[in-house]
Length: 252
Ligand code: 13P
Image (cartoon, rainbow, N blue to C red; front, side, top):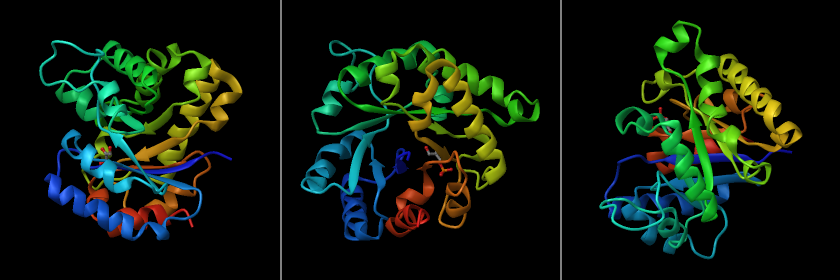
């Protein structure tokens, strides 16, 4: 049995006060999260510490950062290291989100450096891949995703690979209201699993592969019922406690 995961990526939204309030609301409804489903919230850096304090002493909701630095410490003004994030404490980090790749020029090399930092500091990476609309229209989507995986995830030692969570987020579905159909998503998830199996073999059966891109309470059940979709990475719908909890409940 693979882990089931619902992760909320808040992106650059909410003040600290609003983020704390949103966390309180999610915690208040956490009993609705089906047994065995791991719920993760990923607020901005500034919110991590107060939210970690709120989450202390419970195990229904875990915490993720949205990014980390490539280096471990030193003169890198404005950066936040994986060690700092782990010290919050925080357990997960999202890496390779398409917004980071597109707006901040993150390359395979950047992501490799960040992945190494995350793993050295015991942060579990949620590694994002996904194609642009044009790449899908040109039928390049499998090649694009294979390349994003091969040069970074494919270079890991098997023991580290076992810690990885993959998120497939077709860029054309992010924040557009245009979800991939469950068939399109399943097709890509199955491809990702078989591609990784070519490198890591059977271990891939345990790799959680999440879908992201306009996933919400009305489409989550259909998506999560697919054999290779193990949960979701949720943007917009994770900013409302009831919607986030409803997505988690889609596993029922
Ligand atoms: P939306 O759910 O808002 O489309 O965002 C998806 C996403 O980018 C999650 O990381």
